[in-house]
Image (cartoon, rainbow, N blue to C red):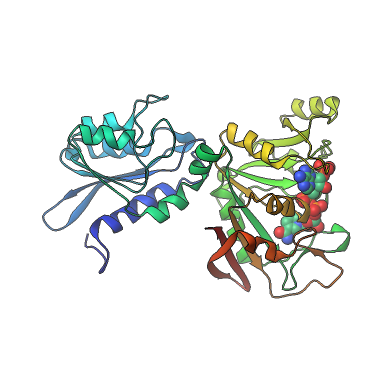
Length: 373
Ligand SMILES: NC(=O)c1ccc[n+]([C@@H]2O[C@H](COP(=O)([O-])OP(=O)(O)OC[C@H]3O[C@@H](n4cnc5c(N)ncnc54)[C@H](OP(=O)(O)O)[C@@H]3O)[C@@H](O)[C@H]2O)c1
């Protein structure tokens, strides 16, 4: 393999490690989707001996898989890894032990793991064993890839991506909350791909009652990559005949209700396989979103996609909880009597703490990606 011109060898090999990890985004929660490569110098440039990503369900980690694949050839080789290798005994032995046992002589890592059980101890252990450690390669991309893990361990909540589909005049639905397809087929496919890379997708009961969505990933062959579906439903109004209930065996369905939601309704829903959890109400009556996100993080959710109507979307924006907004804008208008994308807020409210980082066309629809600085 030869390096692309202008890129350092460590940089482009780290890009390959990032790609190996990103493949499993949405499937490794509560763990981060880490990527690892074992590389040795072949005399004609670096040779990738093995590559791996954190397995589905979060174990095994990427490093021991790549090391096992490389076998004896790993002795004296370099390990590229997108996050600091773990140094604590969890349900699996520490990755640093596997790295040392495999005879790796150099580790190149993108970022330190902010998890207090690691936080620099992995690097310190490796250095103490005479292994050379280089950090800070591919940092920006690794922070994005591991944003869910970082927010969960530092803030106690998932990374939140708000997806909105808006018309050219900033509307998200027809008057009377009647459903309408705003964006086209290419954007729809992109949204399904986004679902696949998130641990959970959250909506409000308003959207369920008007659109009856499934919120699964229905790209060909990818149904098993459907995220957990979460509905904010204070009084447990979710219809038993809804598409969400009908698909609860494809992907889990969790409802977040108020503490005073009817107990008999919870019993009925639980009996058919829906999980119900409860949080406080805010003074204005809506569910406490900070508590809801904390609850999801406690259950292991690291990457949350919000695909909700204007009320829930605006509430997350107002509470400063949106880390990324992916806004698809269609060329057509819906007219003045249609409903605004953010209830009671202009769309520009997102600019208060997010800035545009990317744009792309999906068929006729423009995607703008805004992120927290
Ligand atoms: N264009 C898009 O991207 C998009 C996406 C989804 C939906 N939609 C459209 O949006 C419309 C539905 O809008 P909507 O605003 O009624 O739906 P929504 O935002 O999905 O749901 C609103 C409901 O969520 C519940 N909720 C619980 N806690 C809340 C909180 N803290 N803040 C706000 N709401 C909370 C409330 O019902 P309870 O009090 O009963 O809990 C509230 O009425 C439909 O026309 C649908 O087609 C558009």
